[in-house]
Length: 496
Ligand code: NAP
Image 1 (cartoon, rainbow, N blue to C red):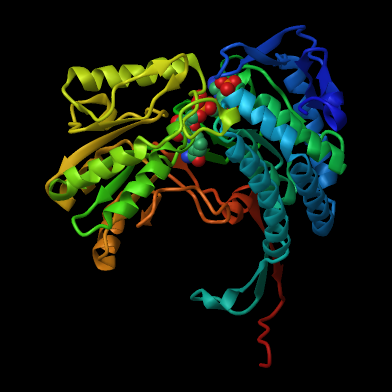
Image 2 (image 1 turned 45 degrees about the vertical axis):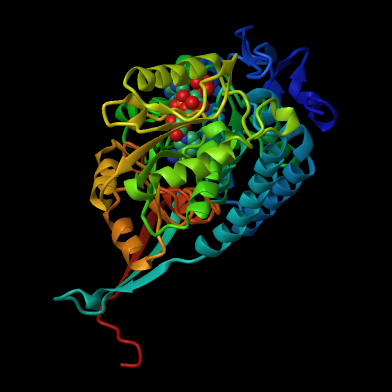
């Protein structure tokens, strides 16, 4: 159970503590932040509202702990990560329980998120041992005008203190996708979890605590992003920010100083459907891609661009599958569960009403109870409707009918986002041409967009992000190359 057994020390009365210097603490602010259960709309948990002084303190601790950690052998860092991964998986049930209560993630998917996170940590440890254990050796005579008088040795060094800020929709998985790479590379880590998802993150952090990481190396400060976010992201003690979320990331990138940034932001993933596509496959992927976790995924299909000649048939197939979706609470493992907050539900409703006013065809009746919104397919959407461009982050999917592939590519590329996209066709040559033409970080051929498997590179163009994630890329991003050059008194050629 959450907050019980090995997790009892992270709870104080009805409020969860924050993590600093290897200990669970109450904030001196005396204030807490309420986490509202999206299903019941009642306060489920409370977390500490940390102060600026407490943030200063964890930054100081992180700075000094990192120096010792950087001197810890790579195999030992990996060993501790493997241990944390095993403990996390062992405690998947209470952590999944938090995900269900905090973010209304369906029960099975909540368990999957925790198990996948354990696997991600283990893979990161293995990958880190390999890629951080190697460097380059360069010789000077390959550049014109040089003799072989210089030997250059490169290695990857840690950056220092990494600030990790994940979003609500995968709070555990997107936290460990930052924590694992940061730690294996010899950095220390300060985590600011999303408010919805904070308690799941605190349980996950406790698994790292139980694994026995050194004091101060990992900290977790809680509080509303709008209140402590700026103080954290502009803190002089931070050497790297890895952020996943919405437009907040754009403002963070404007305020952060001269430090490496990894930004994984929003998306408006297009699904381009050609005339020769297998429409049953497309319909199945539209359901999976557009409606899993009620559309609250960065890589959800967020607009369908279908050739007019097959549009009627596709819409009918999708409608039939929408009718089979189970709608209700996450505890019952329903397909469509309440969206994360009331303000999200209001925002989604605004997009629906705009589409209604402008004449979109409603394939189902619009229905909402509290934060629970019934899945809705909107046909005949036109570019003057907000839903054609904005990210609903809810179970609402627009269909735009196109008369040429170029029209579909044009709509995709006119978006300010560029996360992923997908194309359905049996013609691989056409698929490749379309993939090359789409301005997105990834294009999936004959499948819905998805982040993962977690070792695949994952990146967004334009407003969808800076840099690239995926285990190897994240490790690289959280290191800097250092070179040492050996200067010889005279040219030296092997076997010369
Ligand atoms: P969000 O509102 O941008 O919040 C993300 C994180 O930023 C949360 O931890 C939030 O904390 C924190 N935050 C808020 N204000 C801040 C500030 N001023 N400074 C620093 N941190 C601040 O996003 P969300 O609603 O959680 O997640 C949905 C968005 O994430 C969607 O746009 C989705 O597409 C995107 N997303 C992208 C990816 C990707 O990999 N590309 C993956 C998943 C989600 P609080 O919760 O306390 O406000």
